Length: 75
Image (cartoon, rainbow, N blue to C red; front, side):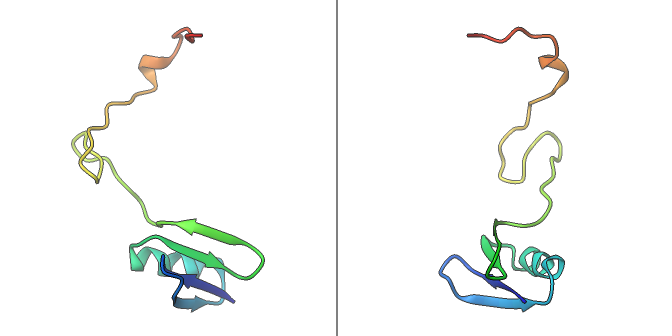
């Protein structure tokens, strides 16, 4: 049995497996702790996306891997 806790430590739900607990956390859309007494998983669950070069929180996303290939590391 997995329990989903909010930031204040209140139980927001229970699930029989981790996949169901993570779906519940996505639905809650807030920072949670999921635990079964043995393991603990924390964070916000869900998929963030980049739309029109902007992150969901409004920050411009300009990182790209291509511009970093072959660049020498600074020491």
